[in-house]
Amino acid sequence: MNTLFSLKVRPGHPDFLDLPWTQSIVDWSEARFVDLPRGSSRHEVRFVAYDQGIYVVKELPRAAARQDYEVLRALETQDVTAAIPVGIVEDRYPDAGAERSAAIITRYLEHAFSYQQLVRDHGFGAHREPMLDAFAGLLVELHLAGCFWGDCSLANVLYRYDAEAIEPIMVDAETSVMRKSLSDGQREEDLEIMIINVAGGMADIAAAQGLPIDEADLTLGEDIAERYRNLWRELTETKLIAPEESFKITEKIHRLNELGFDVDEVDLIPDEGGRRLRMKVKVGGRNFHSVKLHRLTGIEAMERQARQVLSDLHYYQCLTGASTATGKEVAAVRWRVGVFEPMLERLRAMPNLHDPIQGYCAVLHHRYLKSCEYGGDVGTEAAFQDWLAAGRPDYMRASHGSETTGAHAA
Ligand SMILES: Nc1ncnc2c1ncn2[C@@H]1O[C@H](COP(=O)(O)OP(=O)(O)OP(=O)(O)O)[C@@H](O)[C@H]1O
Ligand SMILES: [Mg+2]
Image 1 (tube, rainbow, N blue to C red):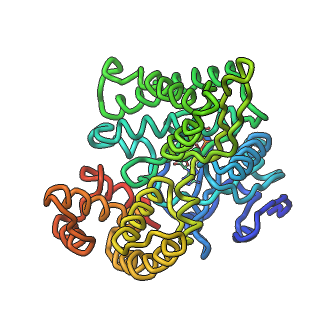
Image 2 (image 1 turned 30 degrees about the vertical axis):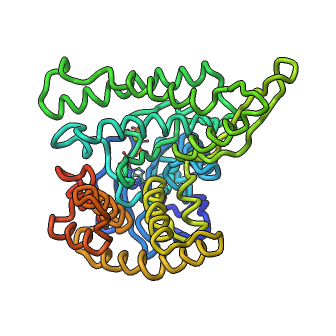
């Protein structure tokens, strides 16, 4: 066997030297793989387990592998929700052949599932609205970061429950190009590609369900494009304000933070001879709440989970009467040690609960529902017991969610 190949791996991961890179992954011993569900793809994809976790190997021609790797690297530095690139292998000649001359390694996305799994039993159901908003939001995030996707489709995204919403994660960047910024024409071109691809994805779903093509939701991509345009406008519009209306700046920042976006800069340019100011906001990544939660407590969570966990911290700060900045910081430590961690321990010990933070969010949601029903605060412990007794209901998952994530458990 030829053992020549070049391998680039980022620190903190295995060296992957134990894998027979000069052979196609199709010929690797089955014993090396973890059998996990995956979406449709042109290239061969395999999952490999190490002590550090599960990794995904995809083999493809060198130029495509480089593109995929470089774009995912660039997106990571801009905090866009995409697969984490770990390494790239090149020059796997002669045994692997030109079409398989390279491979890219990414970190396996835990608790994520494909769109086919999402709609398998009951169509989009309650997931439809959050899913479409989230999908549009991902494309906006990518475009703000200067990424022209080139192949935006339902299949090139994985999905993960994020509190009451769904977080889409870009997994396939081999057709993408990073630019300083995108023109309106380039963004529209990407939207056109998305609309066509999404129609294809919906036709595939209809076929899989044995439905005639007429019953496929072929206009879904246009719905996503509409949501995209609204969000893009909200994030990039320039507003004229009077100098005494500075509260509108705070209002705008608050609104964007609510949408999860960080605000990097606010530009204020005099207009109308100084009578008005032209306000333009530069947004950063969509991780405002997760960064805030991490800064306050060191806890890592997805954006909407973080928002919900933060609301629990605020609830605790109110209950304990913490009002000063120092008081709130002390309460944050007490809450983490005395409330959050013990509950997380209990959730971790539960069978078939693969994402304890998502479980924590479900308990908080249950506490909210029970408190509304009761007409007063029922408290976390009572809500937790009731949640257990009710069979651990989770936001929108009643139909098939736990089964879906269960299928992905390592
Ligand atoms: N990091 C990851 N974590 C978990 N699953 C992954 C990851 N990367 C890829 N997959 C799985 O592998 C499938 C195929 O990946 P990908 O879309 O990158 O392949 P592809 O052959 O380039 O696709 P295409 O046919 O669109 O060119 C995905 O749909 C997903 O199910
Ligand atoms: Mg793909």
